[in-house]
Image (cartoon, rainbow, N blue to C red; front, top):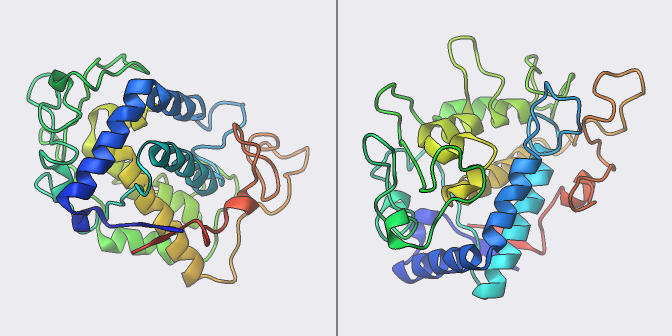
Length: 287
């Protein structure tokens, strides 16, 4: 049993151990394998293939298993290291601690958005983008999108999602507008005046590589998704009578049959079911 901490509470030594372990995974190629996995399973709901990573009910359990894979690899390099989480409702500016020189580095420079500070700056020689690099071989960010400003989600936006007692609703994709915690927290169920909410809005606020299927090219991805995982936990405690939906496989006539995963159907690439990922007790805790 280990602890995932709020990134703002990490000591300098903890930050160094985490970033050093990430850099070692990059050096061995294990990190880029993880990026490829996320990119492969980033399937839009207009596609007729199975969707497990995004725009579907398995968004939370799939990413929980994905974070555990990353953490297992980190701990193989540096025992005791865990993924910190970033509460973007409070640490909500480019001056927040996670963007410091001694941790993730800051925003990209004007022009090409290249990250020039911190351990993941291309100029340090340890972080070359090799997966989904149509944008650049160097890590890019555009925190807050100054040319067309966007704000990180507020506590009220987050609570709007957490207060929905239904896990997910038909048609089990990004167009589920009538409700459902999953779509509200993932961030597709936004009013017409906004394109993004919550999780999606955070990706857009960071910008650069975080806006595509190869988003884990930016190590900020993991801190963002650790918080998303914590929020699923929070929702479960707030709604103890509500469970994962759909509970049973969708019938043959349903347009989403074979495209979304129900409670006891396996999620590739691991072959585990959402039911197996409903809790993390005995593995890790949040503080």
